[in-house]
Length: 249
Image 1 (cartoon, rainbow, N blue to C red):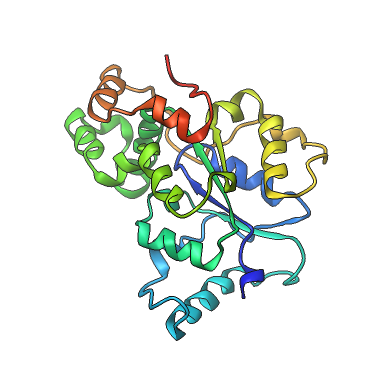
Image 2 (cartoon, rainbow, N blue to C red):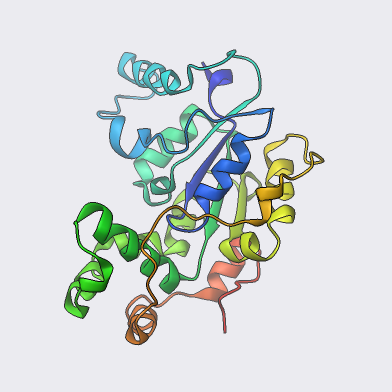
């Protein structure tokens, strides 16, 4: 079953351009993505079972069933589920056991901007509230969630994944790259995955779509609160990714 496993996983981060990237990857003739977010490892895997056990093999079959469309051996399979960035290390270890050579794509965004975009999506979509009606106290409570904080804690997420996967299997990119040089980023991702990167980019490549969320300016206090409450070591992030961090001011 190993040869049928995905060749790449997009593991995050939420609200960092993953919808745009999934759309572009799905248009490549050598990439098979039936849908963007499968959410298998964060919602559907259930009990793990010992590696190699009947339950473990059954879980593999259940996962592969998410990739049933099209010829089994044509193209490179992949999925992008941003929630995978914050998986428990036990689940990351199981992913490594199933697909030790998988390529991992991790997009990031200014942490405060990511959190604000997250809030603009969360309140209308899941809480039935217009972001314009949400009070500061409610936003502070939202920012206090471990789930919300960890999605912007790129250092911890990368360290957890690097415990099991070598650096050469990661592609690190930023929303800024999609905004400023989308064609170059897409070419680099194609090369990383191992498909033809010389295909002409569609006319839509330059247009950025980051999923749907209510348009609203970030409150003046929001960035300062995030930066003071969620201190991030940008030097460490630069070292982990071997990249210049675009939001460092």
